Amino acid sequence: MTNLESISEYITATFLIDNGQDSIEPDDNLLLSGLIDSLGVMQLVAHLQAENGIKIEPREVTLKNFKTINSIVGFVETKISG
Amino acid sequence: MIYTIPQIIEHNAITAPDKPAFRFDETDLSNKALWLKMNQLAQTLAEHGVKRGDRVGIYIHKSIKTPISIYGILQAGAVFVPLDPLMPQDRLASILNDCGIQHVISEKSKAKMLAKVAESTPLRCVIGVESVDSVEAAVSWNTVFEQPETVYKSGAVSQDLAYIMYTSGSTGEPKGLMHTHASGLAYARISSDVYGLTADDRLSNFPPIHFDQMTFDYFSGPLAGATTVIIPEEYMKFPASLSELIEDEKLTVWYSVPFALIQMLLHGALEERDCSSLRWVIYGGEPFPPKHMHGLQELWPQVTFSNSYGPAETNQVNVYHLPKISADHTEQIPIGRLWHDTEGIVVDDDDQPVDAGQEGELLIRTSTMMQGYWNRPALNAKAFYFKTHSGGLVERYYRTGDTVKELPDGNLLFLGRKDRQIKLRGYRIELDEIEAALVEHPSIAEAATYPVLQPSNEKIIEAGFILKANATIEIIDLRKHLIDRVPKYAIPESIVQFEEFPRTGSGKINRKELEKSRSEAHRV
Image 1 (cartoon, each protein chain N blue to C red):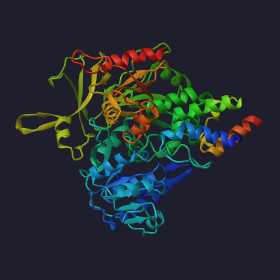
Image 2 (spheres, each protein chain N blue to C red):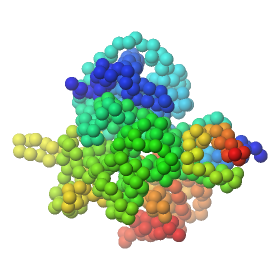
Image 3 (cartoon, helix red, strand yellow):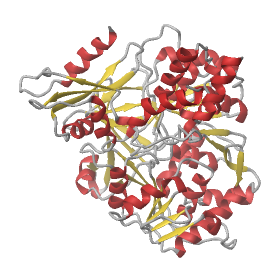
Image 4 (cartoon, each protein chain N blue to C red):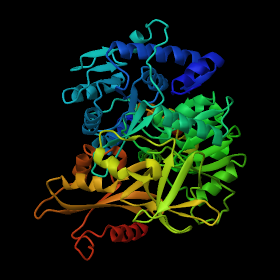
C-alpha cells in the first residue's frame, strides 16, 4: 500500500464515521469540514509516528502539514526521507 | 457622536481610511474598503427586501467576508444572526424558523445544506452564492461589489436590535439573545477603556462569530481604531500554527477561552516563538488552571493577564488582573470585580441579598445587557429579577445562574452553575439536552450525562446508558444518533453501558455520584 492509500484508509476509518460524510478526496480540507477535531489531530499524529517510525515535533504539527490528505502524505514522506 | 455600531467604521473611514480594520490570511481590509463594501451589501440586502429590524443570518466559515457581512447587515438597519457553520441540519432549520430568517449570507460549501432546509423554513434569499436549489434568489459577491459607491441610510437608532446570538436552552431548544446597538457599543466602549486599546493594537479574533467573545474583536477593536486579525477556524486544532501566527502577525492583544492558551502552552512550541509583541492576554468562559497560568506567565513576562467574566446575556462585566501565579498555586483564580457601569448583587434562593462573603447567585444590572430572549416570553419572565422603587421605577437585573462569593479583598470567586449547564472549552453544554437526545433512541432505557475529570485534570463529558430489555446497540450507532441531534462540541467523548445507575432516595439517577465514581474510574 502506498502512503497515500494507507493514510486515506486510516482517516476514512477513524473519522468519517463520526461525520456522516460519504468520502474524502486527497485535497479536501480535513479541518474545515469538521471531520477532525483537536483530539483527532493528536490521535492522527500518534498513528503517523507509530506507523512510519518517525518523530513528529510539536512545531511541525501545523495547519500547513495537516490540511489535506495530500499535505499529510507530503509531510510524512519528507520526514521518512529526511 | 457614534450611537450605532456601523458608525464606528464610518468614522474610521474618514479619520484613517487606509488603515487595515481587519486582516485574514495575509489580506488586509482597510477602513475605506470595509465602509464601501458594507454599504454595497446593505444596498443589495435592501433591494432583496431586507427592512430595518429584519434578521439576516451569517452562515459562513470565518474569512474577510465576515466583517463585511456583520457590518453590511447592520448598515442595512437589520439584525445579524451568526449561525455555526458546523451545526446539524435540524438545529439550523430550527433557528431559521424561530428567528424568521429569510435572508442568509453564505458560501458555496453550504449551498447543499441551505437547499435542504429551504423547504421547511422562511429562507428565500442567499447572498454570496450564485445559485441554491429551492431558494428563490441568490446573489454572488461579484454582483454585490458592482453596486454603485453610495452610502446606504437605514434610519437605525441606538435602541434597535443589532444582533441575536443563539445558545443552548435547557430544554434543548436553542434560544436567541437579543442585543441592541446600545448594548454592543456600551461593551465596546467599556472594554476598550479597561484594556487601554489604541490604534496601534493588533487584536486576535480567535472565537467563531456565534460565540459572544467576538464582540471584543469585531466592535471594541474597530472602536479603538485597531486592527483585528481574523484567525481561520482550522487554526484552533493547531497550537503550533496559533503561536506562529502571534509571532508573524505581531499580535498585541489576545482574547480566547483558556483551552486555546493551554494548548499553545503544551503543544505550541512557544519557547521557539518570539511573542514579544503581546502586551495583554484576556481569557474567559471557564476557569484557568493555576499551574498552566504560571507556565504562561513564565514564558511571557511582559504580558498582563486578565480573567474576564460575564454571561453572553450581559456581555463581559467583570475583570480580574492576575498577579504573578506561583508554581505551587492551587487555589482557584478569582473572576474579579464588576467593571464600569455595572452593578451586581449576590442573593440567596429567596432573592434576599446574602451577607458579604456568603455564597449566592449573582444578579447583574448593566448597560451592556441583552433585551431578552427572542420570542421567549416565559423564559424572559424567569431570566430577570425586577426591583421596584417608589415612584414606580423598575430596575432589571439578569439572573446569571452562577453561584459566587465575595472574597475579603472584594473580588468574586466563581463556584459553579446553579443548574446543570456546564462550560467546556468555552462552549455551553446542557447535560440534560444530551440525555434527552440519547433517550430518544429506541434501544435506550435511561441515560445520564455528567462531566468526568481525566487524570490530566481535563474535564470531558461522559454519557452512561441502560439498554431496554433484549435490545442491543453499537456505541458507534449511538454517536451517529447524537450527531444529528446535538452540537458537535456536546457529543460525549466517552459513552459507557451500565446495568444499573446509582440512585438517590427518590429513585432518581444520582448524577453527582456518577461524576465522582466515574472520575475515579478514569484515574486508574
